[in-house]
Image 1 (cartoon, helix red, strand yellow):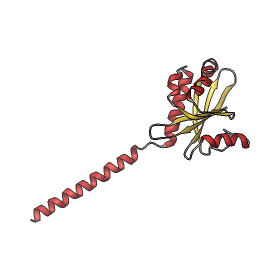
Image 2 (cartoon, rainbow, N blue to C red):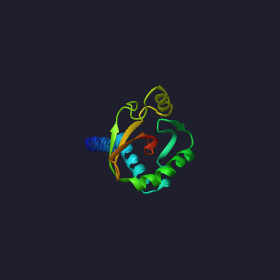
Image 3 (cartoon, rainbow, N blue to C red):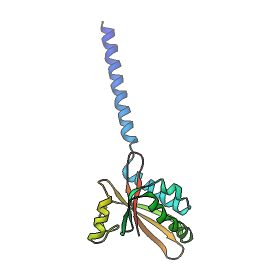
Image 4 (cartoon, rainbow, N blue to C red):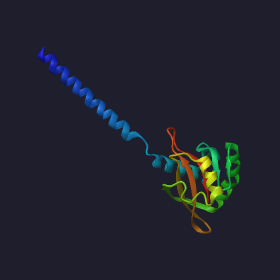
Length: 163
């Protein structure tokens, strides 16, 4: 009887340790929303520079905050906006330099004034992030744009842009 009790206790302890290790690994494998957002923003910007509108559009979701001016409700509208940008970007942008996560969505990078803030609020949810994308241009050196990004379980989606 004693051997069975010791064996049972050892087996139970081993299973508990294995369960704790599995739980710790699962927690460590969860993706940080900021890292997820940076990865999607980088992929989105690089797809536009490579004139791969299909790849860029896979990272887009709607409603879309468009350059402080309007909210687009359909992905085809977003795609139309970017068709002209792709050629312009390829001619003038040399490379992506860095992507910086900005904590506060309402920090002024995406909206200035009450009307623009109202548009921004109609698109954003808790947890959305603003990322500053800094790139090098042929003409004026370093410039930046702001991307509005929504992290999620299936990857981060770009939901807005502003200069």
